[in-house]
Image 1 (cartoon, rainbow, N blue to C red):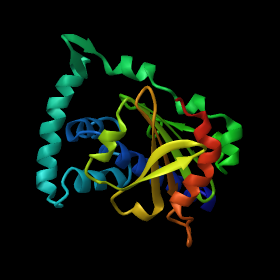
Image 2 (tube, rainbow, N blue to C red):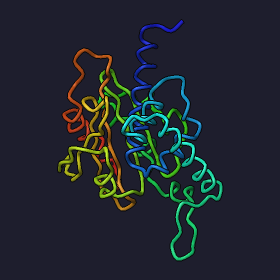
Image 3 (tube, one colour):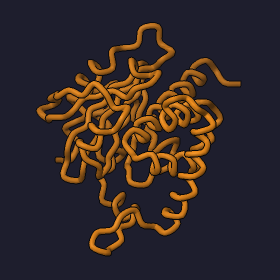
Length: 238
């Protein structure tokens, strides 16, 4: 039987996974998001990912329409994924594996001393989503007693994040001398969640703070991000 602390850790993991899924869905086109949801993490033993299917792929809440879009898009994207190509330029295919190999990896790029300064446990490191790597992304997260943090590395641009429906409340910020764009993701966890994307030569690095919903008075996430970013952001690539 799980202890109360273990149950809290499990709950914290599900909160982070749900936020990671939401961030990816809002950063991708619908077809790409569905391809992810059709993968190994589509059916966790919980309700977080299913909620995302209904709210993000089907904003009106029509579950039947959500399922139809899910199945159709999954079939199309599965065929594209099987071909191993995500884009072409002048007839030259580029595999998502090639792109991912070039991305900065936050799991190896952020030192333990910076994580401790951010009040998260380096030993809680979790690569990908639930340990499963996602095509076109390098993702790493860590948990603390009041919040978790996740860093995302991708070739996408700040402009793509700004024009994606569901990403809201954009504002300019400067953290550790680095300019970025702060935003939130619409949804039930909006008041617990804060994100900043920093442009890099590879695309962007996104830093996310998610407060623990189990706390009576969770900290204000954007204030936390500004504070912990002073130790985390200097590790990000230029």
